[in-house]
Amino acid sequence: MENATENKASSSNFIKNIVVEDLKSGRTQQLITRFPPEPNGYLHIGHAKSICLNFELAKEFSGKTNLRFDDTNPAKEDTEFVDAIQDDIRWLGFEWDGLHFASDYFEELYDRAVLLIKKGKAYVCDLSAEQTREMRGTLTQPGKESPYRDRSVEENLDLFARMRAGEFPDGERVLRAKIDMASPNITLRDPILYRISHTHHHRTGDDWCIYPMYDYAHPISDAIEGITHSICTLEFEDHRPLYDWAIAECEMAAVPRQYEFARLNVTNTIMSKRYLKQLVDEGVVDGWDDPRMPTISGMRRRGFTAEAIRTFCREIGVSKSNSLVDERNLEHFIREDLKMKALRTMAVLRPLKVIITNYPEGQTELLDAENNAENEEMGTRQIPFSREIYIESDDFMENPPNKYFRLFPGNEVRLKHAYFITCQEVIKDENGEVIALHCTYDPKTKSGSGFNERKVKGTIHWVEASQAIPADFRLFEPLLLDESKEEDKSFLDRINPSSLQVEQGFVEPNMKDAVGGDKFQFFRHGYFNVDPKDSAAEKFVFNRIVSLKSSFDPSKA
Image 1 (cartoon, rainbow, N blue to C red):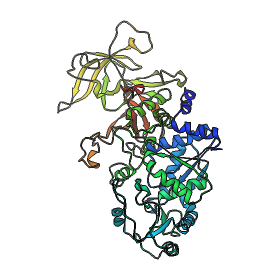
Image 2: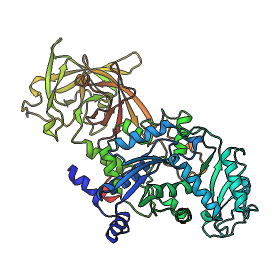
Image 3: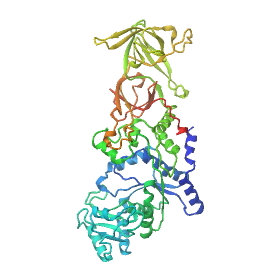
Image 4: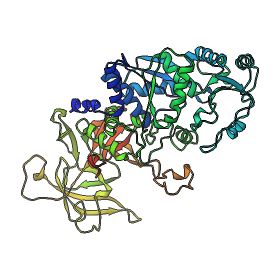
């Protein structure tokens, strides 16, 4: 099955078709792609699509993929993010051929900007940011030329050198490209190439106080590295003429080409690093790796698998049209990946004690249970059974409705892997709350004995009380409420107050050696992951990855 899934990577899409044609025609000798994140936050599921596309495309055609950090905005960047991004890419299953930083090229970027000035293609502008915006024009009106646009080459060279030397404060001057203030493409209306920022850089320290803009640094960095296909998301389509202009006017030897695809948007999912950072900074979530976050590190902590994420990214495909992917689509691939791998065991999330009054006091027996009914290779285990057990409080009702087949006074149910029990008495506290049940069992009905004298319609799960291991269970709902119609609501007002619910219960004693990252299928509850950050020997913490079933059909999505 794994090979069949992996072969999905070879399915065609418009970018792959371009690569095939370029290799066939000889325009491209070896495919070289890149993934260029800015180290100003953690990667999220949207980045995973780009990572898979770039790395898997290069692998399929025996090419190369570089990881390049776009570290041109030091005020928002940090080595923490650099390290986290590398960890996430490796966890997804990829390894880059070259590790680069835009800051590696700061000197050459500066030299190429000097070349633009000498060619009369760039000038130093003294307009404020507000004035620059006002003079840029609109979609229907051309922009107005800066009064500093016609400075001489000599004056521009002098001012640019003094900008680098640190003579001017932040915001006083910028270097702009000289293109066309009347262009219908606003991106080409003398865009800013460099700005002044007296900010300590996490790699270059205080060596620089001017930093290149993304639209300038990115194409030149691509050309320096010999990138053949610069694959980015659709919002950069209008920037492509500037990308091509920069490479041509800077007289780069290599000429990469930019191609755009639709970014990944998922229902009820925050795909903005700015908003994600706000959640972290304001303490709405427990850091970037909170299991509710759509970050790759958050998904990993929750228990998502790299295999499932890669399959999801392949299956949703690559297109030029923006669309919204149902979050249940990803959950489907998580279930498909885990159903043959996860140990199937029992956990009680909301415990109610059951005392089996006719079971011998002080006796404990071991019952056989398969570890995964769909995968015999996972073998079997033994679970203890005694006079006192815990069941789910939801599996008992004192006054049940019709067609309720679980436990109620006088009713008989099957205990998974064990015996039939019948509820005889309900024990309540002084407030009338049910605190325990007295039941009897039929020793002839032991699981595997072949007993067939009578049938029961209900099967419930349980854990033996004396050896049960206490655990916290985190149950998640989407972090973002789907309230797109209420546009007047602020971002934080759309956060789901019920996104996290914690239950305190028990798991089987055979799970005592579980470690962070171990995954289990809890009978009737879903797939769970041992939290690698908060779980400890004295108290396990389980994150629910996904529920067991969904009505969602990915073939109809």
